[in-house]
Image (cartoon, rainbow over all chains, first blue to last red; front, side):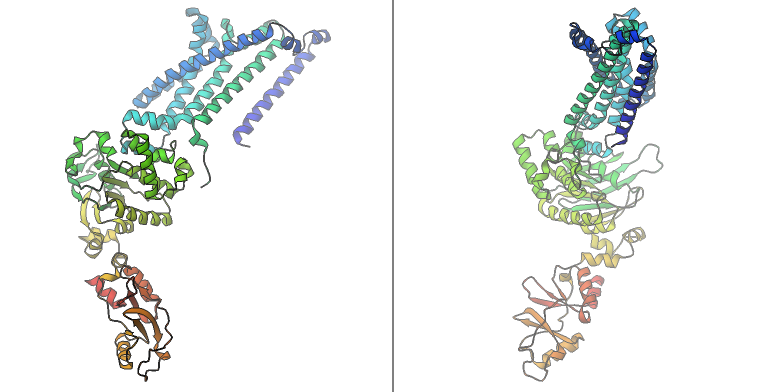
Length: 255
Length: 370
């Protein structure tokens, strides 16, 4: 088992145990009546309530829309920022500081402020996009920087123009790192979308906030689990894209 | 396309902030169809000189012509596509298959698919890459195979000129020796003008038709064929650079065929006892070599012979000649044979077995002195 996998498993285990303790305490603090009427998860809500599938789909779609749009816009903006960093090295510190500051702004504050000047959807997209910039730009630049000097020298020596070198050598070779950046940004945004519930959006996190306000744990559990499933699914999809798009990176046979 | 000559006239390179120029005004001609080796200690500007030929580095002053045309008359990309380029780290594109790597320049030149594929297959055969490897990625190849692909890629558009920057620096010694032989075999088929940079004097002597020795600051100390470089180093620097084993290094360059061979202790089978004694005494050995119709047949120790008979060699049991050389053998090989042979004499015969003469330590010393 790789170290990364061990860490992932450990984090998941700790999370599950913490959730279990929290749930157990919560239930034990309630009277038996409440426990009977308001359990941690009511399966009927998921399986027999008529409007649930439609609501669930609605929320998932909203969650996906917010995620995909902000990541796509983030990719475009980060590509521009990366090009600037790579072309004008002295801009590097300025651009990374800018992206870093955006990344550290408390998310709730950002959502709240932006929504007073924009429509809620626009506000959410702006806020979520700004969180992707640091991750994406860093990975884009690191990916291009890591292209082996010998490959660049060969590209020049064989007579590729600057544009040909970028398109045929640098970007393809940076692709694994670029796609990793996109994957991390996507998973991060899936989590962050929840915060946009403060401005009446929030996709699946709407369940969590509703459940909290109405003291109805079923909704909180549903929202949490659905969000996790969505994040893992997107992670797997992008890993699949990585696998298909960069066959050379994982076809290493013993010499 | 076979090679065209490269001429450097007063080529200078100064880097900003450096005290001395990296390459002093340099005049050098790389003859068409020859391998010119640039060699020197680090800081001698050998790689810089090489990279000025395909304008990866632009000269501060001076002109470089290829086949009489100034390299600045072409666009940068056109120039580079017409020059093969091989580097030490090989620089294959890891995301492209072997075939795609080889096809890089044809693709840049806009060749159609059929022509490109045919050329890739031809090159794979030329440099010795198995066709099954063409679909693999560079990471799936050994270092030696990668280097062959690098050479194939450089030759793809049949450029007249091939620049090689320490091409065998990254492979282990056994593979290197192999690749060096392959390069010579390849060159005898394609006759490119090859400029090769190395810091290994043995490689320079082995591969170079001419070797240019550069000193720190890009000063040309001597340019000469390897044998001349070893026999008559122009100055102290060159002689210390080629090392104190110049005699031994020359041994691997010169061939037995160039020596003045001795008659040796060899007689026809019909020879009389007197002739045998004369030949043996002249050579100072205790055995006699025997020829049939001028072809070397074997040898017999004198003790086995009855020297009173009329034809003592008739019917004698001949032993095969182990200490045997060909005219194309190097003096190094000759020395090896002599040192391990009975009584310090090796016999030389051509491909048909026709006896040509004998080699001793004296013969070799005479050959090196001339």
